[in-house]
Image (cartoon, rainbow, N blue to C red; front, top):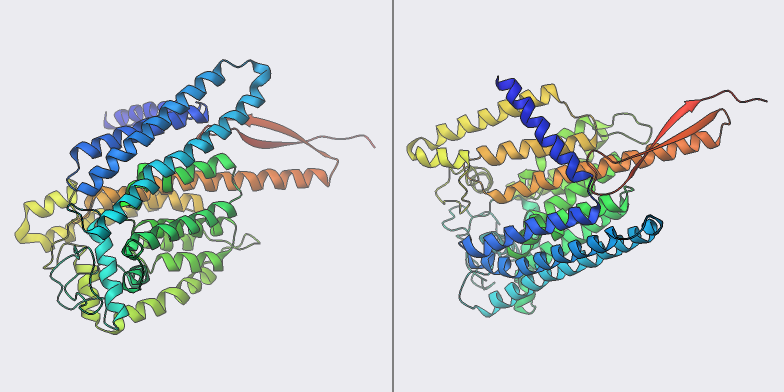
Length: 480
């Protein structure tokens, strides 16, 4: 019975997914923006922090307007005759791009500018998440030639700004050393609005993400969907406006995946190694990529990839540990696991955190059990579904991140942006593979007159409203 129930649920989910994927792209956009408007509205009403509520109020309007525009355009295009199909498709594509630009302005740039100004002016309320100040405090200490990792932290860095002459040595820094440069902006002479770490975090994310999408040879529709999840939808817009420390990690992971799919193991190793110097959340994919990375000839290249990773990771980690190894361990390992004296502000009613709070006197034992349980689930899945391609690595990493987020003793719902983006990126990488396969078939057929091509046009199972072209080959005998 349990097996039959699982199969039934899976069938229903897949049927619904196929139905959604069969919809025109602009209709899919309408549903995404409508769901985003609902999320933003709920955030505006129920969020505890004022920065979340402010973002929700502004973003709900932007997403709602975007959904309405998409519905209106889809209705107009649906009434076009079949002879105008090509013109309607072009109009829909232009309309989607205009809407994306408008949503970026209304749900990202405008709220971010307001938050930066309000924080710089010291207005009442919370105008940034604690991680922004955490990164800035580490940058302050590094600029003063001090260890970014304090030996005896007592806070999580909630102050809006610090004076470089009175560096705050009490703020915990739970990130890896590569995150320190993003906080150095707080120690430079500039207008206070530009001293906010979110300026650098956002700029870095947009630049790296744009490079990754430009280097991808997937279709424009697939790359556009990745852009939506990384920047436009709440999965990117909310953290970009209020915090943003995970977004540079995600952007580098995307670029590393694209380079691996293009079979550039050294470049991919350097980029993913850089992501591994920012946060431990990059490490599951970094390690799994050893199984999937290949060179230009299609040969496995784990050694070149691994050496490239070490070339970046080793010196950065060495700098982080050099001052005080124990302080590094307390900040980077003990604090995220909820085992340090400073309590993490991360709070979500997920299984791991609920269990840790239910048994506060046995926190170490509970943490160990949760780690073992999560590792067991991931290992079993790994044995059955070992990833062999960059796209498969992205999917498996997304699954592992879901397990880790649910079971971690100090976590938050925000970490689910990792699997959300990773699943979309797997879809983008599948498009890159399809493009190269079609190009290879066309090249082979052009050099031989004994091969004829049959073009099969079908909607992709994970389509985002586009048409994928799969090329099938049949061999025939031609007369001489």
